[in-house]
Every structure is written in C-alpha cells, then in structure tokens.
Length: 176
Image (cartoon, rainbow, N blue to C red; front, side, top):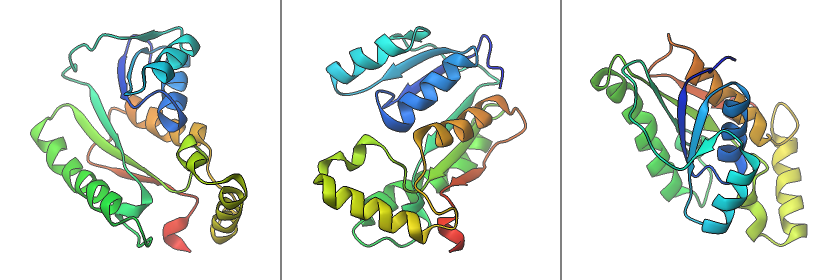
C-alpha cells in the first residue's frame, strides 16, 4: 500500500493495534502523528516510529477517517455491554458521517480478539487459558495479531473508493 505524502493521525497509537497501524502507515510512506494518554508509552512509541510527529494537521478534502471498534459491537460477549454500546454507536455513525463529511471517507475496522497489551491485566495463566480457549472457538483457530488489524486499517486509508464500510477483522467470530 502506498501512502506516500499522506498525513495519518492515530489516537491511542502507543501500543497494540494503534502502534502496529502507525508503523505500517509510516512504512507505506505516510507522515504519522500519534496520540496517547501515557507519556512514557508515547515516548517509547515515538522512538520506534521515525516518521511520527506530535502535531495534528487538518484533514484533507479527500482524506479518510477510520474508527477501530470491536466485535462486541455486533456480537454478544458477556461482560462487554459498555464496550458494545460505544462500539455499536461508532459503527452506526460511520455511514452518516460518510455522507456528512463527503468527499472525505469514513470507515470502521472491527477487530475480534487480538493479542495486545489490553490482556496484560490478567494473571499470566488466566490470560493464556482465555486466549487459548478463544483461539479454538474461532474458525481460523488462532488469536489475531495487531499487524493483521493494521493491514485492514491501512487498506481503508489507501482505498479512495470505500466509505461507510465496516470491515470485520475477527478471525470469523461472527460466522462461528
């Protein structure tokens, strides 16, 4: 994917899917700006991304906004009602925003279970058991990696003919 000369802003771009997306976008030629709430993680991420900037520019008329939601927006996972509501709202807003902001494009990538630092609050054995159980339940038979979700996000950034779309990047969680 060639994003040469594009400006990309990634909120929560200091780890996991955000950092993987920033890295792939930078490798694809984009000028990348990242934001995060943890100053130490932000400094660490900036050290890894030679194309990263701290300033935010304006969104070009032919620009793109990509929201990252979660599979909980369209599938029932006990204990995720708050996330489901927020992510469902973003999914629902994408098509309307695509019309309101045209010709700018607005899309959504909805990942399933991805091996990111979000799982690090679980004790190691519990985390491994949870991820293994979820991997076996997925049609692809494994947990996703941040780089795989980043590929879907960067594809939407570079595809000028996609708007109002929701791309599931969930290992087939919705078809099991």
